Length: 69
Image (cartoon, rainbow, N blue to C red):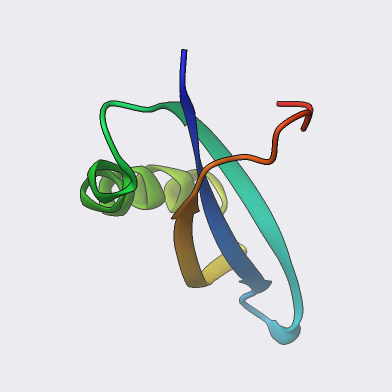
């Protein structure tokens, strides 16, 4: 099974300097382009459950080999 990583850079809504990366892993259905098409809906779901955080940047990538998922 191939996995794709949706990497969100998020900041506290109250403090734009407190930022970190969040990783959402999905089964790959073809390519990183497919991840780019599916990402907005997944980001909306994630945002609903994390109201104190704001997504400022995102990208799709393949996880590093050997990385714990």
